[in-house]
Structure formats: structure tokens, C-alpha cells
Length: 230
Ligand SMILES: [Fe+2]
Image (cartoon, rainbow, N blue to C red):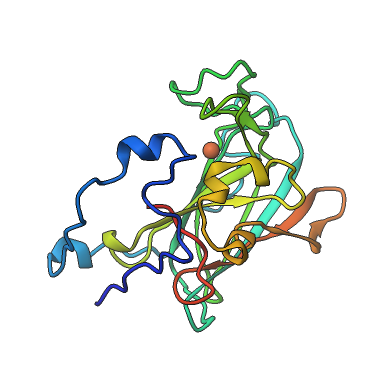
């Protein structure tokens, strides 16, 4: 297996001044390529995940339904030639409808939802498709700069065939007024690549009386790659 170097016209740089924590964590020395290590080329093979793990409206229930707007998030994982990538583990994590994560580092003064875990996973089918039922996440403040708010977003991880191929990105929602103000979103240098981080509303995916539908295809490589985090 050979790994292609990142196209930095598409992906956000390790260091982006406006995104404050990158100043501390970005490497200050040139990167050392790791090649040939067996551990880089191996990983678990995924066949399927239990269906309920893709339903975030159920997988964290304690005594009722989670609060907020139900949404379906689905799409395909594709390679650089638009071929489907089957059997890849897709994990997602997100804030609840009030903009709060279940995490001790998240002390935002917004309510936790006892019936919402905010994490799920599934494995892509033969067409490369994944599908989640979840709750639309709320925007939340993050103290990066005065009055800083993250747009509504969902974090995605794609595992790939080996540990070295794991990719992480974020999906945003159409029409969010916070996009233009968000340093994470704007750290993607190419405006067209930035647009690829925004899901598309779809009435075809929307289920009557159940949930609005959003489509988010994830392209792993090439000219139309989805921007990935470092
Ligand atoms: Fe987040």
C-alpha cells in the first residue's frame, strides 16, 4: 500500500493562526515520513455494526426520547474515481440539540440530554453508503476569540483499511450564518473545498412525519477530496 501526500490546497494546514489551539499543537519541525512499518499498513476488517448504533435517537435512551429536531444523515464514501468504498467504519460524534457534549471538558452552560449520547457508528454497504438517524446539533461557544461560536456540525471519522488511513472531518449544515465566522471552517484554503463540507438538504431522503434528510458524500482522495483534519 502506498500513501499519497496531502494536497494542501484542499486540506487545512496544521497551523492556522485564527484557530488558536493549532498554534500550540502544530508541529514546529518538518514532518518525518513513516513508511514501511507493518502497523501502518494493518488494521481491523469491518463487516457490520449493530443497526442500533447508527440510530442516535435510540442508542442513548434512558427514560425517553432525546430532545431536538430529528434528522437523517446519509451519503456515500467514495475514492478519487467516485468508486464506492465498501466496508469502512464510519463513526460520528456531536453535540446535543442544546449545543452540549457529554464530556468533562465541555462545561458550556447548556443542558445535557439524559437520553442522548451523541455518538454512533456504522459500516458502509456495497455502494459505500452510510446512514444515521440523529438529532440536529446546536451551535456552541468555544472561547477561541471573543464571542466565538461553532456552527452546527457533526464530526466524522472514517477508518479505512489500516490504522494510518483513518481520516477525520466535520459536516456542516446549509445556510448557517456562522460559517463565514468560523476559523475551523475557514482554515480550509479552497472555497470550493469548503463547500464540500456542507451537507445538502434532500427532500428525497426526508421521511414524512419522521425526520429531515441531509446528504453528505465523503471523498477520500483526489481533486474533489473532502477536506480532512490533521
Ligand atoms: Fe464539535
